[in-house]
Length: 590
Image (cartoon, rainbow, N blue to C red; front, side, top):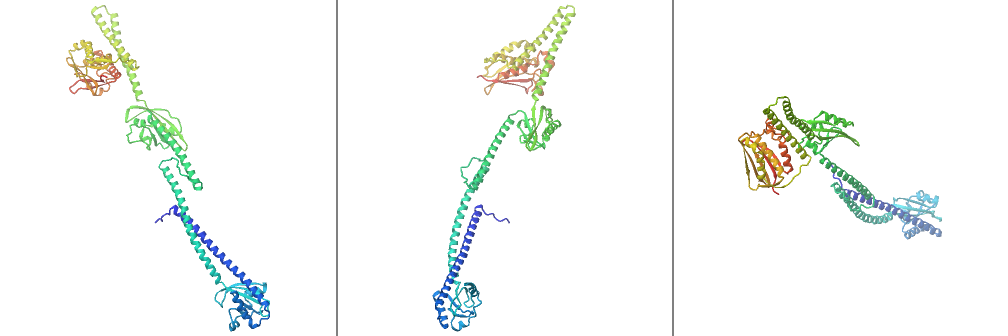
């Protein structure tokens, strides 16, 4: 089991308190030893002085009788408060303040005592040892004496006095030690508290940095080493924050650019895994909304050998040619892919740019179809005209045949004229040269004018055109001429394709303040597959019948463009009861 970790503040407190406690203890121990040595030295000096004074006293009392020497030792010992021993030259104790009579005589010879030997040799002997007589440690001092009976004067003092004085010092030292420990405890606690507060404040700033708030703190870190380290780290964080802000800004600009691009962009690393895929690329590659593609091998997204070869070349640092391709999942779209190497410090990769050229290919195909259709539409009447002209030139004069041939030539010439006129109008619309002349116009009047123009055709086919105008649709703000052309093309188209003897209905109604005009017929209708293409130029559902009716194949295309100019929309559908219905939606009356 892992032991709990002490808090930093507790560790600092214990370390500081321990250091102070050890220091105070060592001071007390050293002080005690020093005091003990000082006391011993002082006692030793005092004993030396007193011993020499006793020797001088004996020197001035040279007539002391042998029996009085012990009494003199008792007298001097009482005065000095120490044990006084008089030793003869042969080592015999002749006087002792602690022993009398028979006990004095029983004392052993002191001639070989260390202090006595030293006093004889150097004039002063000092020794410390345990006294068997008194049973305590004693300090002995011996000095020579100039007396006939006494050769050495020795003073002895029990070291219990030293211990007593040292005990006093120890008590004082213990009191000082306790006081010092209390002060050390308080100082350690205060120092650890200040340090803990500083570190807590620095940690709070660090947590705020970690949360993303990189604003500079108002906290003063101090001028010591901790403050220096904190300031250096703070400056490093500020610098990292500035660089991160720059990177975030650059990334945001890059993402905005990539999002706004119509080209698809794919970035892969040196392992061929997708690192970035913008929204345009995801749309082009038909990825699901939740599929970002990031982290996947690019071959799982674009399964095309030429694209793989281009990316491999870019990863190898070589330039790759653009590749045109289509995807199996969407064969109707065409793309051009260009791969280029990307070099960065310590890494390499490739970027693939996708261009959707489906509209260009579609426009090119429309252009080709347009040129082919125009050529075909012009060649057919020109061939007929040329044939009949050659016939007129080679055949004998026959007024009836000549007239019939000229009528055919005139009909084909009129058809060519209509075709050129419609082509020129479409060209003007495409070039934006078709101007609008907006005014309030009557729907009934426009429809009436169209029917007047188409009366011969309607009568020849024994058809009826019925109008169904709901209230509020009598007038509309628009261009009367263009509205006339729109309705003429639609009604003429309905009359041409509907069977003889049928009815064409022209209706109008309001739908959310927008005018809706419908042209419905009772014809065969339009195949569902053709409904999305009937507004294309030169597109016909029944080509043979259209040519027989004299159409150019541009009428519905002109309708779509004119309705667009008026700010509306046109659509085609099949009626449930049979026939086709064209619906034009225009802005209502302003």
